[in-house]
Length: 181
Image (cartoon, rainbow, N blue to C red):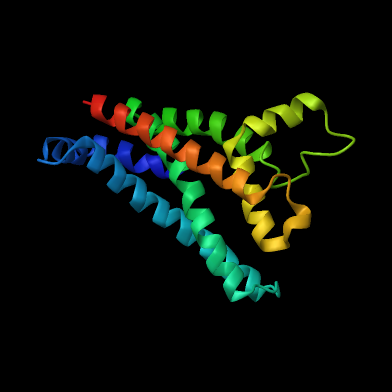
């Protein structure tokens, strides 16, 4: 989500004006930013995989190829959130604060750090995690990396939620980009 900061930098240095007056649609501008920032995010994830190999984690090449599309799909929606917020904001400090208020709860409720199911987890926390789209991205990655025994939802449910979230966020993002001045 922090990749949206590039939009604020572009606004601050006047480059965004050049993009907005170019003879291309705002949707094309948004999608270009989204694909570029998503590629950066996936490359960061690949670096984590390589660090895992250096630390002795057994990573199968076929599994690695299987998780790349899930990583990319997950980043589309999250980067779109960042770009949407950045289209409304003009200064870096405000962007960082707002991103933290969105990013941290999504991350902590995703199940990436601790289990979100079980006897000790309150029902309201489980319900909140079910509304979090990042939960489904983490679950899909966990399913492919660790096997189906660790998953909360079937893989097709994870993919359906991630894709729906992506489509909604891309629509919202292109709309906010079209309203940006």
